[in-house]
Image 1: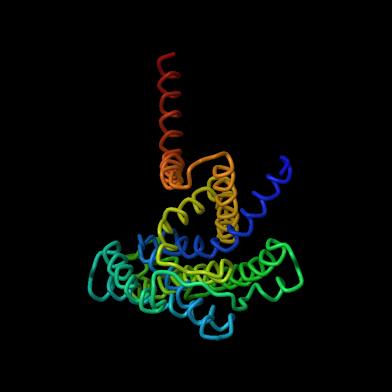
Image 2: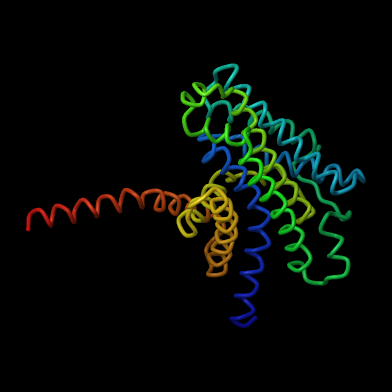
Length: 302
């Protein structure tokens, strides 16, 4: 491979994976940004989506139906976390951990073993049947799904219920004072969040034609990295812009991972790189504030 072939491969891989994992990033965006809820259910929900999707395909279920059932599975997982938090008064982080832990056994039961594979048709098989290159067969379908859910989310969060979810995330006390059922909004928001995350897992499993118990490991870090990179580079001037930033952030993140791997970085070191990257970006506002403070001190002394 020459230099341009390598660049093309990295970009194609980044776009292909970035589009699939953008749905997961959007799900985490809803819980962490919109609801201001530190939900750790995601690591179990990604695996749930992949397990349901591929297990159904192995049993000759239509791939599209398998994706929809996986979406419903994630929705239910989010409801459970929401009920644990709102009705049983369990702290947000612990509620997510409890659901995530329970999902481990459920996912293992669904798959029957730690990993499964299939040669059956998936939602990507339609274009793959007459397009040789994987990227041109998979990316358009993933992009189509992303566009559909982008418009659904943009429309939904502009409705009264969607605005109520956003208001709950901004200030629960104020939202309750306005007559909003904040408990219901939290449950619904987490259900939508985990539905998208499970959908991402389902698409990933169908793309790779495999599912395993480790697919959800590091989901939170990957999702947050995608959100933070997107916000930092593309901004969040409006809700629509914010959604687009998350999607582009996911693509850029996967591209950066591809570059790092191509340069010889050990895949086992990626988690450390992710953590350092998130810490640096999150600390940028503080660094900027300190720099401005020092400039003022210099001006005052002068």
